[in-house]
Image (spheres, rainbow, N blue to C red):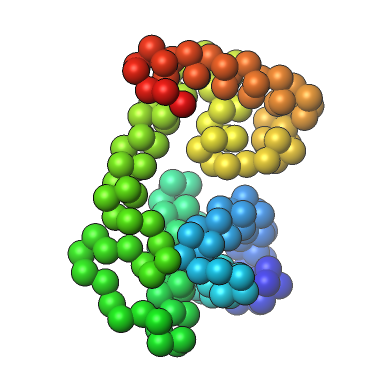
Length: 179
């Protein structure tokens, strides 16, 4: 999949940037696709989304990291809809309606609110735990990805994550949220 996307890029410096973007976000894109599709269709949606991102990567690369992720996730959703249309399983959505097989819009809104509260609590954590928790819980990185990004041993990541998670649970309880 990566080689197909890299072929769409004409400048070598964009290829390296895209390779890093792909490696950082492939897992996130697949998890997002699996919320809407099953099996091979989710992988197809991810491939189509990354190909679309590659075609526009000179513009995408100029965006802030958060906007780059949002662009990718929108591309995954669009690809999922396209695949469902091809199979005749998509009839359109009303405002706020979920994709077939996706989450209920009300539940999704409640989850988004809870997610924002969680992110706020993580950002208020002591620095020792904040970045590890952010990478593991918000960016959904593996311990190995987090260790590589932070330049720390994996064992340190496991320890800081465990301790930070305990502290986060205490803070959630203080706010009346039972994890």
